[in-house]
Length: 155
Image (tube, rainbow, N blue to C red; front, side, top):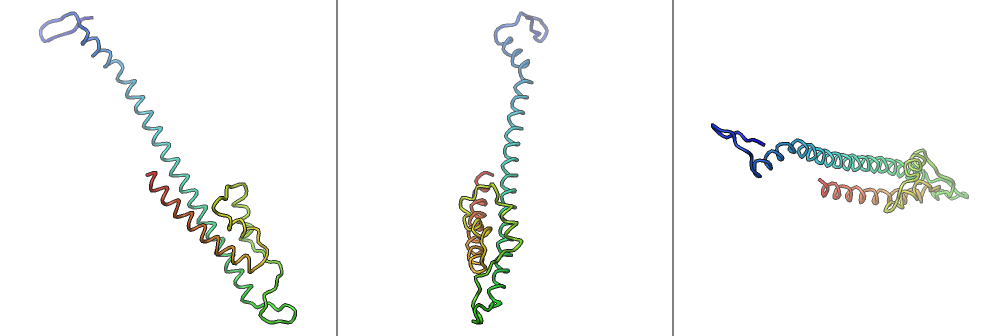
């Protein structure tokens, strides 16, 4: 291998050969570094999308729990007459569309930490649905705070 020096051409030494190898390998190293960087960006994007998907899911569950709570409260406030006693809440069956939506949302999903949401989705009494909705909202708010803490630590 020959190396051009100012005003002359000489046979290249070991340092010249290493420098040539480094110049030759540089594009591959740059491409590898770029691929690693793109992979990290993709992982971060995926994690952010997963956090946002979970946040939207919790917000929708909170909306449904509030709707069930208000519908159950209206039934309890109506003071349905049972056996001639005005103001006594009947033990009649209570279901609303929001409970069915909740059932669809949580089907096949890990509900650890959201047991009251599961209870609410299957409850059939106004007074117990109201109580489950109140507990569910507390659980959902706690899950949202935890999600916010986790998303802050991954950023």
